[in-house]
Structure formats: C-alpha cells, structure tokens
Length: 127
Image 1: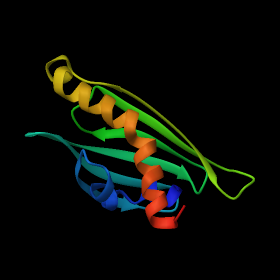
Image 2: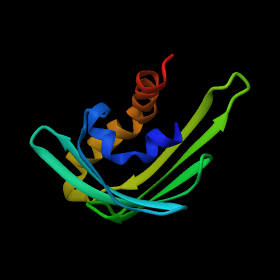
Image 3: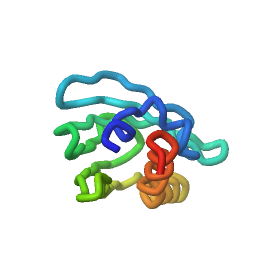
C-alpha cells in the first residue's frame, strides 16, 4: 500500500479528481510531488514534501499551493492475515476567496482517498 501512495504519477489513473501527478524529487526518506486537482473547469496544483519511513508512514506538508496550510499523514500497519490496515488524516485551510470551490474539493478528496487507494490495491495486487 505504501508504494501505491508514493507513486504520485499514477494518481490520475484512479483518483477521479486528479488531473495530473508529477514526482519532483525523491530520496531515501522524502519525496516531493505536485498534484493538479480538478472539479469541472476549476483546477489547482499544489506541491507537497512527503517525509516517510518506508513502509510504515508518510507525513505530508505543503510546499506550494492555494492553501493557508495543508498537512496530512498516512500510516500502514501490517495485519496478522498478511493484509495492511491504512490510516489517513488530512488537515487543511483554504483562503476565504477559494473556500466555496477548493474547500469542497479538498473535503471530497480527503473523504474518498482511502477507498480509492483500496480499490487501486485490489486492481494491482488482487483481492
């Protein structure tokens, strides 16, 4: 599951709100990626720095984008049956002028993220 989350360039294949995903840089404990989120004709890009301890967790922090702040965390916990329990949290604040559109889009993204990755895992790894 960690690998699916880290592969930002594949996001447009399975996240319906993601118009583009670009890996900017990656090293042993950090990756920087840019995502373009889209809702109708409205689209905004944002870049995050994602520090991680593979394959256990990834912390997300805004580098650049239309937010006052954005941070999140993915946690991956192996289960006894060979599966993976995924925990995801996101905290963000949007400027007042963008709140009607961007706030709704980010809430939708945050609320559907884990399910979208679970469906992608079934496609990639099987049931």
